[in-house]
Length: 359
Image (cartoon, rainbow, N blue to C red; front, top):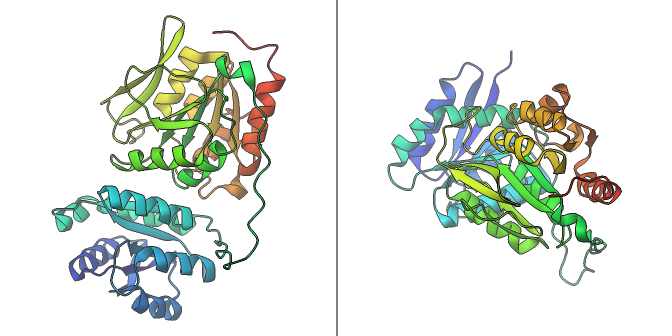
């Protein structure tokens, strides 16, 4: 079997050396080049035609975001970003994912060499995923003075339905953009939305802030014990397990330092099992792009408990792992392109208005 051919782009000679060593130790991949900056990388990519590149965020001559933006417009290919565990690193990483990077690895700010070595299996796993990912071409930014893009039509309100349902979303690789695409199309009075996106500590804070700035609903990291309210989105904090519980007539968030489930913390399995147990027929489940099977079995439990489940189709996924497993488990009522999920969700809410179980 042909090896996955990787080009490493990083301004640190030490990091380039360590990443090269980690990649070359794998039987199914090889580092075919290491570039110190994007200008060197541009020629290397042109000449070597790699399958995947790893790209540092902050580099001289041209930063990683500028380079990624040009790359994804002109020669889209799988990219794994290497960022730092800082607030600035999180913000830039989210921009990179928006531009089309498949995934990212967060290296520590101190002790970088040891930190990267400890992340070896995570790095190589993400390179493998990236090599199989569906990469999209990013449209060029509009020229100055060009007419603005047509804004999406306003979404009709759902009124009283918002107090009777909770929407549950699970996602992993490619999910930051997919989840955003669903949430921005929900009205301000929609049901509460509980989200588990595989993401490390520190990054979920920036991600929640970004979603809050873009959406009609209010989005924040979930806090233990807070009420789950309509018109709000609750994101599982990185490094924690997030579920929902009942407290009298109310739903509340439960955020704990639980053990990893399916190797993940937060885990979609944990959230979806709580949806089945606590919310039952008032739950709507959504499974978006992601590698692996986290949440698939729990989504079937949700369906058996009366939820209605929508799953993203293969053509619109960056990685068709979690959705495929949910479909194979018999969890999906409908399999839809990403662009159709929010409209179908709202259609389902309105259509089921007369038959919903009241809280």
